[in-house]
Amino acid sequence: MKLRSLVLAGLTAVAALGSSTVLAQAKEQFFPLLSYRTGPYAPNGTPWANGKQDYLKMINARDGGINGIKLTWEECETGYATDRGVECYERLKGRPGVTLFDPQATGITFALTDKALNDKIPLITLGYGLSVAQDGMAFPWNFPLMGHYWTAADILVQHIGKKEGGLGKLKGKKIALVYHDSPFGKEPIPLLQERARMHGFDLSLVPVTAPGVDQKAAWLQVRQQRPDYVMLWGWGVMNSTALKEAQATGYPRDKMYGVWWSGAEPDVKDVGDGAKGYNALALNGYGQQPKVIQDILKHVHEKGQGTGPKDEVGSVLYTRGVIIQMLGVEAVRRAQERFGKGKVVTAEQVRWGLENLSLDQKRLDQLGFSGVMRPISTSCTDHMGSSWARVHTWDGSKWNMGADWYQADEQIIKPMVKTGAEKYLQEKKLTARNAAQCQS
Image 1 (cartoon, helix red, strand yellow):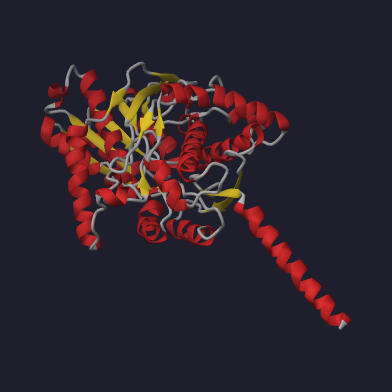
Image 2 (cartoon, rainbow, N blue to C red; image 1 turned 90 degrees about the horizontal axis):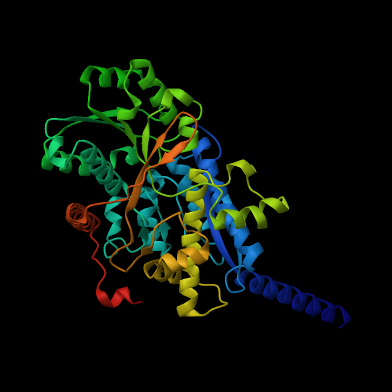
């Protein structure tokens, strides 16, 4: 009898412990963090990942989480490889309180799009991923917030057109796209082909085999073609290698324009004066002056809790990681407003939050993002929310931000998105959401 009582007491204790563990987990909002801190893309992937982690740490330290809900996370190393990215997703997607995924690679995004549809987990692909995923009716779980590769390519064409005295002056010009031979690098091609048709410029495509450490053949082709402008669609070691090859072949760097993934400190610092005059899109502001960066320094780095070196805080890609994580946090906060403050929200509820973001300038100022980004407002149909960018130029030692803001031309992009979304639905034998489904 005594033994039976002990067994029952033990089982009760185990059950109680299990219940308390479940309750503890239920009070945590989990952010899976796919990252790559190894391999040829590590110099760019690391500050991006550090910014995401530090923002979560800051929200916990400064605010105690989101309305009392503690934020937790776990990194999973992908090495920028699609198969490893899928493995990380499969391992982390079932964690209690899972929120959303930032795949941190276009190839991984392509592989996860169908999985996210079945698992009902949002994918944030800020400034990358599938351009057609702007259409939230066809892609209910993909969120290319703040722009995608079609908007980036469109803005670069606008900027070059402005330098030439108008888009009409592009007729007869030669523009070469030197691109990472992967889904990422190929993504802007349809938009550039459409703009070439509209304005009469000659577009040449120059692929570079990943990871891009050997580009001699590509730049021999550039030297032979002598384009008026080169657009660089690179990532990681490919960017600095391209600038060195341009210098070696005598191609003027001030005629080169990179996408916003080819315009950060790791891309130019080792080239120095050799990259002077090089231009790239700037999707976000940077530096240590913004309040959000000051808060991270105060609440995280000054307490010895920083994920990476202090002098990296506020750099271009670090700040982009901060923005991505802020948008995820604000989606959770928005979801709590509808589904219950002080509660852990599900991934499906976070999707609703992502579709109902409304961050005007006043709210951005409150969050400490003044000067870092422009307002963004999403909807069920529009999963992008905004498409503004500037151009900054490397002077040999630092980036100098241009004054002009550009917005992608939706009169060109929306029909392309619509056509691409319809093709995707047809190929996958899927149907678009209706208005009633949008409210759920």
